[in-house]
Length: 291
Image (cartoon, rainbow, N blue to C red; front, side, top):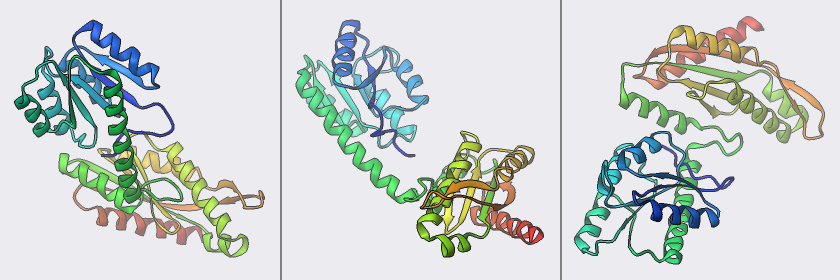
C-alpha cells in the first residue's frame, strides 16, 4: 500500500486526544505551522477516520476511552499502514510504557507536558522520512513517464487483492496503441512520449476509482478491475474503446491523434499472467479485424 504523503498539499495529521483543551491547543498549533488536522477523542473514532485514509501521520494520546494508544498502533499496523508514522503521547514517565509502544510499532513516544517546539521537530522529522520512503516505493511501482503503475505495480495490486480473497472475480483490459512506431519514426520520440502520456491520462479519467491503470511496457497499457463481474467489465471496456482515437499534440504543437485496440479478460483472481495473456490475445484479434 502506498503511503498518503503528497508534496502537492499540506500533510494531514490525525490527532487522537480525549482531553478537549489539549486537543484544541495541538490542533491550533499544528494548523498554524501549515498542517491539516483532523481530531478524534476515542480510539474507535480514530480508527474510523483512518479507514477513510488520506493521513500522513498519527499523533495519539496513550490513555483514551474506546481503545488506548497501544490498541490504535496495533490496529493501524494490522490495517496494512506500515509506513504511516505514529507518535504516542503520555504523561506517564514509566520507561516500560515507551518500550511497549515502540515494540508494538509506534515510531516515537513523547512525554507530557509537551514541549511544542520539540513536538513540531519530531513531526517534521517523521514526515520527511515518510516522504523519502514514499518516493522509494513510488519509484519501484510507477512508470516514470506516464505516472501510472508499471507492471510490478499492477502485480502488487493483484497480489494484495488475491491475498484478501482469491475467489473474487477480476478483469483486465490490455490496450495497445495503433501505429505507434510510425509516430516515433515521423515525429520523434518526444512526440511518442506525448502520445503515451495522453493515453494514460484518458484511461485514468475513464476508469472507476477502484480500478488500476498501468503501463506494461512500450505502447501497451493495462487496466486491472478488482472484484467485478463480466457485465461491469464489458461496460468499462466499451467506454475505453470509445476513447480511441485520443487527441494529443506533437513536440511542435501540431494536433495529432492516436488510436488503440482493446482486449478484455475476466476470471478468478488466481493468475495475473494468464489474465493478461487472454486479454492480450483478444486485443490482437481485434487489431487484426480492424486491419
